[in-house]
Length: 162
Image (cartoon, rainbow, N blue to C red; front, side, top):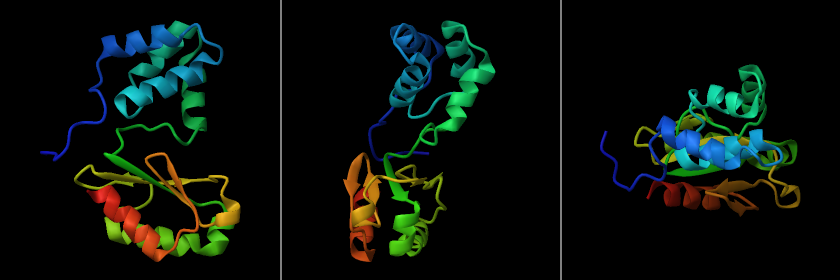
């Protein structure tokens, strides 16, 4: 598949993964720090990295895998060029979040948790952005958006599809 943009992430290479792991192995809370650094570099945490992290930190693969699966932000595969997260917590649901999530799925042609066929947009659920007073809310590429309505959602989807 041909993409219309420069790749946002590095291609997975074991040597680069080992370099990232070594760089962060001595830090407090190293498991989380390393997993975040790997995802920042590659756009996801490659399955091959889990045993590498375990060896570097003298942990079992199960322990590292447990941390990886506990936190919803870690991905098994690369995200799209843009990541649109829709809050699915109770306050946002009560303020119309369910209808907005369905609208986003329809506009993008993917269900929550998936990436568009052109790899431009990953649509993800998130369980509380801390914007309950301005619900429903979303996040596009790390930018928080409160008081989401159909018009604002449509603008976010259009921005993400560019």
